[in-house]
Image 1 (cartoon, one colour):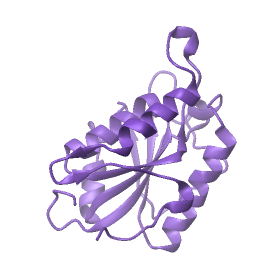
Image 2 (image 1 turned 135 degrees about the horizontal axis):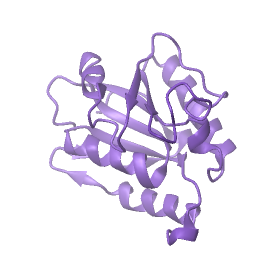
Image 3 (image 1 turned 90 degrees about the horizontal axis):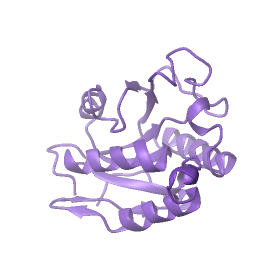
Length: 186
């Protein structure tokens, strides 16, 4: 249903599953395992895997916290999109990477739920993409000491509100890792 012309393909966006981002993340190992499963499944289906990597003063490019977790390995032929803002489209080459591959539908996984995941989902819908959140393949750290809900509630709320997200000619939605089907939308 994407509003992007001649963009029938699907891609998997792996957002910020970096050492410094997920070190203290809620259910880190389970989420990373689900992301790994999805990466392997996308590769088997010849679906593009696009890696997003955040840099800022806390995630200095080339530092250990900036690196992707050891359980996930990007292939040389898979695009890596560096970013400095929450929305993976903002001031990056992501749109060019997706256009080159004729992608109009995205499966979104990674971290942090309440920051880069939400920002990228909204950025995708706004730009004309269908954007599906994999509900058991995103996570966040606990910042409840600062007034935020606990991570389990942040994740549950994000899954709830994104499950019915729609815009004219575009759709959101939430699916579990086991239910992801990597094919062109009907």
